[in-house]
Image (cartoon, rainbow, N blue to C red; front, side, top):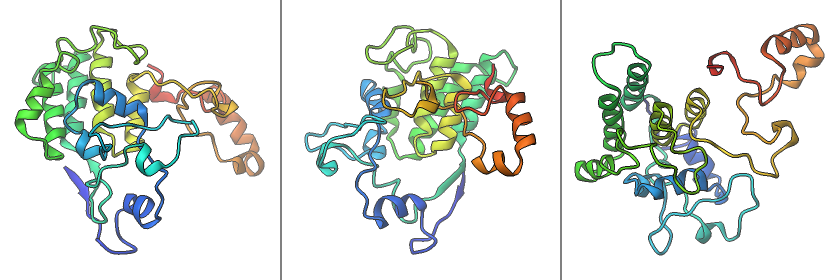
Length: 251
C-alpha cells in the first residue's frame, strides 16, 4: 500500500479529522447508498467504516435529502479509524491493483490468473487492511451475493439494476465499497464500470438532468476569459455539462 503519513497535530493532521472532528461538525453522515448495500451482505467492514446505532445496526442518511435531527443519534457516522488525526492518506492500495487485474482478466487479457482469483484477493486485502479477521473475511466471501460465481445473478430488492450477471456488476460493486474512504477514486470506479446504479435525488440541481453527475463542468471563468477555447473544448466533448461522459468513460 502506498500511504501518505499525516501528523497527529495541526496543521498537518488528516483532512478528514479536520472536517469531521476539529470543525465540530456532526452533519456529515454516511449515505444509505453504501450502508444499505453493506447491510444486505453483512459486510464485516461496517464496524470500521461506520459507527453503530444504539441497537447495533447501521443507518445512513439519504443523499440530497433534508435528513432528520438530531444527527448524532439518528444516523451512523464515519468510523473512528478513518477520522483519526494521524490516519494515513491513501495513494494506491494493493486491493485496488487486484481489482484492476480482475477486470483485465474479465476483459480477456492474460494477467496470470482468473477474474475470480483477483476478485477474491482484492476483497481479502481490503478486509485485511481494515483489520477484519480471516474468519469474518471468509464468511463474507462465501456469501452468495459476494462469491464471484453467484454474485450479481439475482436482482436484490432495493438496489436498481442488480442481477445482470456481468463482471462489471460483480467487480464494480465490490470495488466501489472498498474505495469508501477515497471518494474521488470511488466516483471514478463508478463511472468506469457503471456500477452500482445510483439514482439522483428528485431535488437535485437542474443541471444534473435528473442523473448522477459524471464530470465537473469547466470553471465559469473560462467562459469569460477564454471563451473561444472554452466553446471549442465544450463542443468537442459533447457539451460542458455534468452529464457529459469524458473520454475514458464512453465504453
